[in-house]
Length: 185
Image (cartoon, rainbow, N blue to C red):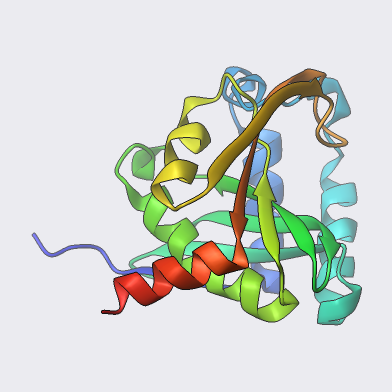
């Protein structure tokens, strides 16, 4: 059986419903396992409006920059950054929509394909990720990609989250470039 082809592309209008479906049709236990407060989830129309606004915004004006993850040409998830300070830092979020592709190592490979977009398009000095400390998937994936654990603390990391312990992982531009160079030699 041939290896699947993994690819990353920027968000398009055709992806909006799939992202809304991911948030609104996921099992409640899955969402709370990521630190989501189910009572804070936006409506479908609010998801549509937010995503359409991001599509319409120019790169420097985006509040969230989203990439779609594909396996064999089929959209299976997304990765986005927010809290973007061009030339400085942004915060990354990882979401595999399709339960069938979870726990197969695709997430790590797809994040690796996403990193050049974030560092390149926004000239970031550092990329941060602060997943729920009790969510094992991102906390296993991030160190494999060269992210370094900076600290663990309690916060409400986003508008749809409950207060929770998070782990702050950081990948600097220097480390990213060194890892890219090492992979190409």
